[in-house]
Length: 284
Image (cartoon, rainbow, N blue to C red; front, side, top):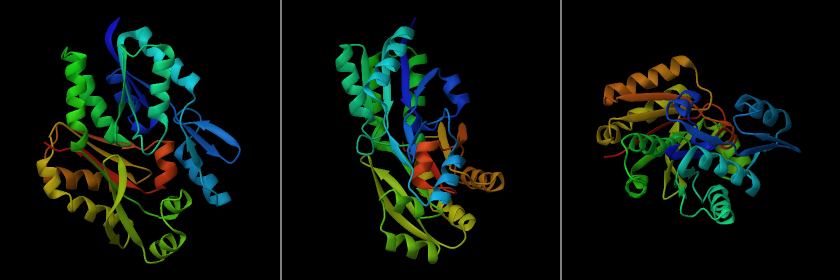
């Protein structure tokens, strides 16, 4: 039996390869397309969501897992290890964290399970998970790991730039007037995560490829201050050619031991829409 198992919800957007490499248990949040419910990363793809939304002009809805499902996954973690560290999307964005806490109390395993509010989303959570997995492999004690993760959380830099404001509008995250004006004028806002919440950043104009490359160029100072072990380029449907260009710009600014390109899952894609791209890393 392992000493510590790691659980994460599906919004961490880690690839199957990374989940396997670090032996991470992923549990799905849910996506609702009208009356139908799907499990993120299991029985629906982001493109299915986009197709449905464009056809119906309706908003994909998302929801956390049930208490029973939370308990099922915690039990699975405790069957594999003596203790469990569970990462959840920011508490301000989902009830996943509170449901997991309720499951821990219901099972009376407070001394064995540690639920973390990541105060982040997507591979911003993934960065915390990889750090945790590497500390576990080094044999560090749970208390030391948890302390390190709390110190690391405010240093995670998560941002992204969106192609269309339509999905943010449909999800209630910007007004109809702002979405219409933004799409008409080809305005593409950057959004960053701070204190567990999303905040608007610089607004870019023009064609999306140019916007994305300008967004990455603007990150030069931040990339220089970044820890050079892991960096994610996470997107919701960009071309391979554009992703390679983004990689090249990042590598011109700083050298990273591990640079991952990952596709956002269904929940994140439901809110940001197609063509979104973000660069996520940890500052020293």
